Image (cartoon, rainbow, N blue to C red):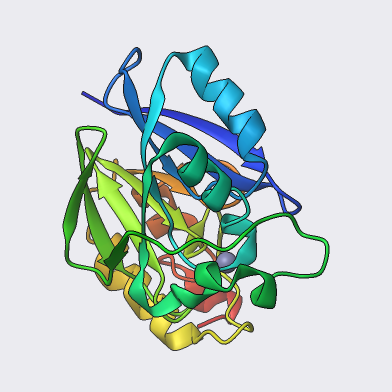
Length: 215
Ligand SMILES: [Zn+2]
């Protein structure tokens, strides 16, 4: 059965935050990348009749972290995030632009890719896909992929913030494009897409990427 996924655009960069449940009406949810006001998000969870059982973070850029501490401390939910980017949450104010809301938090669990973690009764497979950021992970469960800032509908993550384009492209091709074509992709910004659509049409990593002069 497909997961129940709700998307909220939070924070200064309208980053996608996903509330993921094993089915509509499930008592518990996983929250992925709560990048903005946790108070609004908690009201929304209450409206859905679900409680936060865990917080999953794809990478350490500030726009994915703004609500993590408040949501974790307010709900008692534990946090999973990439080990190589933990200091960006632990020392949040040093990495976030002045004026951006958010507080430091020490993640309870660290991932580096290859693990499967169970949150809200959902087994999430952690896939290491560095290149947008050094230790970025994507989360895959039940035919649905939460890709953070690795892969978007018609685009890929920027690599000018300490990233590596060759590493990013090869990770997308080997780890994400090996998933079934029907896999739904929920990216960190913008609308959902599918593995099959991006394989066919993505101008950076799709079948025709060379025709655009971009490699
Ligand atoms: Zn990012």
